[in-house]
Image (tube, rainbow, N blue to C red):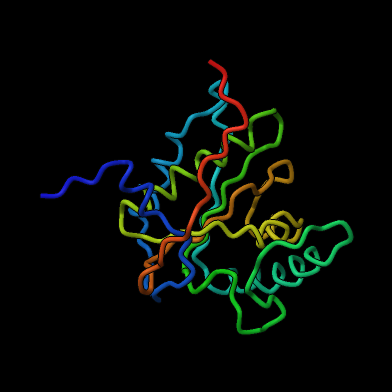
Length: 191
């Protein structure tokens, strides 16, 4: 029997951008959420709440709103162009890459560390997905759409909550190759 360590799982995590048309079950999603809430939380505030979307027509509606919003933001004055190989104007391109589940981590943005807490929960969720043989990917291009009054109303998100971390989850379609990472850049090391 092979034992997988936390280090192995962290090194195996990938941003998966191709998914099988296979539905993720409720028990698996609950397991992901249970591990997400075990993340560190500043001053024990536990600000994270979750929205799970598996309704394909609603995902399509979010997609159709998000793509032009994100594409427009890429061309806004003062915006630094990020590397993207995707053509957001292409009607065949899906920001959800065929995944059937979108988990959105939200919070009331009331404290200094609330967003950090949400991202820590996101990391736990993605590492757990990897350990379970699932794929995940943060979909930052959906963030603006998820925070519109129209979508918040459809998802029954209170107006004082904001989407922080939208993550697709599903069964990978094929193998996602590892990408390179820079070596740690230490600006100072004071002994």
